[in-house]
Length: 440
Ligand code: SF4
Image (tube, rainbow, N blue to C red; front, top):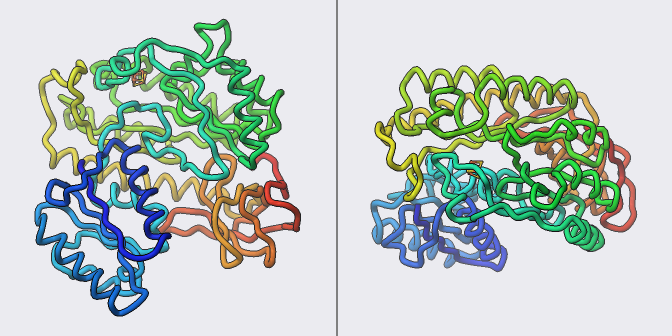
């Protein structure tokens, strides 16, 4: 999908545009300077003066005239103050308010059904699995993949597996922690294979990081289910190792998994999830699903739906299959048409919402440690250890950004799908201090 971004107004609008461009690119879209060539136009409007409002409206009209075939998304102050008038401007497909701006890329993909398959199913920044920020840093631990999943271009693009020396990784995490980063996420194309080329393993690496750094939170981004080593489970007893696993499933149908050349069938996946939940009761299991893989029949699709329903994931990243030149799947017969892919994807999105709500409800009334990433006295935002979004009120007169605080959960925001609560026991102190931590 080619995307053209345009902004009016202040520096903040420009910074947001920068972050959207990174977000869209990370999810496999490309940017274009030419609005006429784009499939999607995003306009960040301004309302600081009457003149700014006039210019915003003019820009929207011009954009839709210039490229009537592209879908048009509008955000920013003009659109937030006048959502109804903005929505009826000719050509406008979607209005994203300022309150939702941080999630614009995700919302646009969901609402306009734009998700394309990432280059690699495993890179967290490619799937939008975890957000970047001052509090969270991605640490690349390896590159390359030995497998040949039939839809994946990575093996061709990235070559053989190479692990980064553990000393280097530990030193990088220590340096970032010293600079104020509170959470490190280990990433790679195939992190389950870490260490095979240097007599180590991913579990050994995690153990070493926990011993040789004091980083308050450590996560692994995404790991192929068949790669989960047995010695990973005891590591979760350390409350600094976050109870969240992203295990790409891709399909719940064994015949589709075979065509995808995946190494884990539904039975084994089910067994792994059961084991994970037994060993780590608070664990949040999230996954990726590709809909419309070549030849996906109605029966196979139903198997995926049933399996997803049975497993009850904490969140899904849903991708409509798109062929990658040079992969085996690109030559498979039985392409699924666009409309059917759209319907299947929407159906899975609906199921995802139900599953997410159900998971959130489990945490009502609980006190959870939250790493605060954004906000001010009017409301703070952050994540629990098992990567659930939380907004919280309280702690007046204290800057909580980049701190881990305890939040008592008292409500669920059904629209935004996040937990809401009240900050407990916050106190002063320099940024970066922990106020509370423990298993959520
Ligand atoms: S395991 Fe499969 S999907 Fe993952 S990077 Fe390797 S080839 Fe690609």
